[in-house]
Image (cartoon, rainbow, N blue to C red):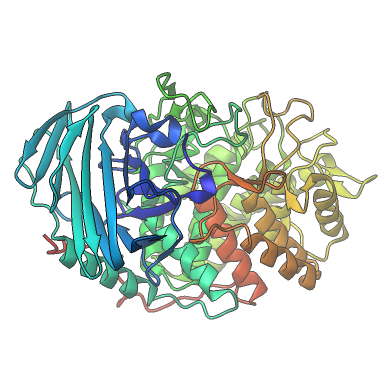
Length: 609
């Protein structure tokens, strides 16, 4: 059975990422990209679905682990009766091919070690053909080929490749796993020690560029590193998470594929990147956004592939039992075809933010934005599926209408303050009409709160976004009442649910889910905004205690079992942490910087081979 979600750490090379448990097992790795089929899929099944464990013989969970400074180099240590051993795991910046490097280092004494490699291509489904060589093995099946180079003899056993060896104090044993498409020649594998130096230098240089100087520096730095790790370097796209189908309820069916790029993450991500000094990354994300949304505005999707791919058909992998029995396992995401009105507003708000920050010419992409506005003007009155991608009936969600308002508000600003061409009078009239419509139909005066959708008594954590986008100021009594109501009715042992799934069957799915961490970070910002600053800081500190030992957070949290839930690490959660820290620390604005010296830190084809 796979480990608890909070027991995993991540290593990656800005093309893909691996999840490694406390017992030294790589239980998830998709190659060569985040959205490729996994060659280690034990995370969503069992050991027979592929994993690679290195640990002292007979040992269980490690004594301790950490990242080496501000890097993605994972160091896992076991204290045994015979001595102490350290396992160093990392993926160097992508060069010719993808490498996963594992170095076993003797710290004290003499420790007997075991390595067991079970390669299973196509999400744990295909056992490759393995050949043994003088310095390792090669494995091939269909489009995938892998080479493993190591200092120790390897043996085949029960469709796995094993090694038994002893490491003494001061000695290092290396393993390098390299992937390449099977029709291409064998690539030159990374030199492990040189790759280690290159990887450390890369992350040290990258984190050295951040400008955040407020409280909670360690938490913000680690969140930024993990957010960077979720970036697909060739395009600048940022995946929502490194995994698919980690459940929102263990044993439930709310299991989705998050290895894609969501448009609604754009504004939040841009704010976090710009506010911490990562101008080049923000620029690359903006460029990905413009490429993805180009085309017929009526065809705008809520999510796209890493390279802007539109078709993300959803299917289930029935040979995988699911994480701790939580089936089905899904690849692809049918929500890509939903109509979610707020996405038009999220895109236009994000591009407005980039204009305000001065990271691009003001007229860059303006024709695309005008086309989006034309579509939205004709469709803002339509019901939609809402930002939570509910699979129930379409409704007039308040948050969706407010984001349509934000789109026309930003368009009006673009004309008035940036001199861009457009029918500002008409856009202003649409903006005001949406505002009046929301206040008339989406607000419950008897309870002094906005509601989840028109005519509903239900609430939604997304209502906390209303003051954040400027729909109403934080000191408006309706906003204060809404914050109070959301906190009171959606609180689950001190953390916030997105909504109550059982209310009116709004999402069309059985079961429940945990507290949504991004929403709880939104509550931190809302409490701060309405003047309850001490309460906001206390809640933020409490949220930080939910991070695992290496600073990772998933999508949700179950207070009853004290377990993380959902896909991990979750970009939406990490961005929420960074933005909440910035607000509490008094740094919520972005400025135009001189970007001439900035570069997108896409790893060069480093010579670590």
